[in-house]
Each structure stands twice: as structure tokens, then as C-alpha cells.
Length: 79
Ligand SMILES: [Zn+2]
Image (cartoon, rainbow, N blue to C red; front, side, top):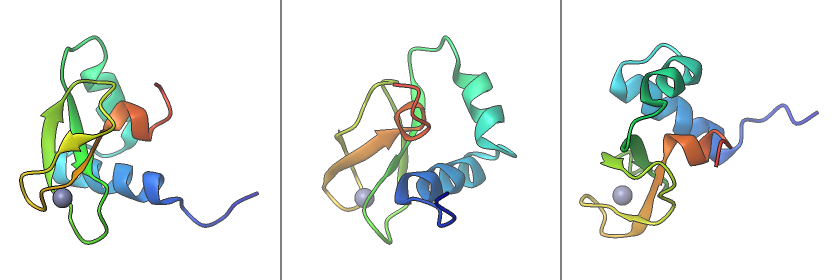
């Protein structure tokens, strides 16, 4: 078993915190069936969040300029 949280898991937890959800489960329940989904920049040190398509993996980050914004559903492994 891998005990260290992966980068994706860490970002997902951070996104929940920033969006005010207690857990990834709450966030995923809240966005289920919606056309947009909370997303977070994957660059280390940049926690910019945005609303993106649920399957977004390379969204543009307004904060650091990278195509690095990934949706919560992708981070959670749902897509
Ligand atoms: Zn960024």
C-alpha cells in the first residue's frame, strides 16, 4: 500500500478546502450531473481554482499561465 498521498490526492484535498467542502466525497456529490466542475491548477505552489468542464485536464490557469488546471472529477479518478 502506498501511504504517501499522491500529488493528485493532495490537490483534490486542497480544492475541497478552498471550495468549502469537508471531503472529496461531498464535493463529488455536489457536482454530480452538473456541466461544470471545480478545478485546480496542478503546478506546485499554485492553488488557483476555476470552474471547468468535468473532463478537463489541461485548463488554462489565470494565475501562473500554464495549461495545468485539472477538474476534481479527473483528480478523483472518476474520468
Ligand atoms: Zn497555476
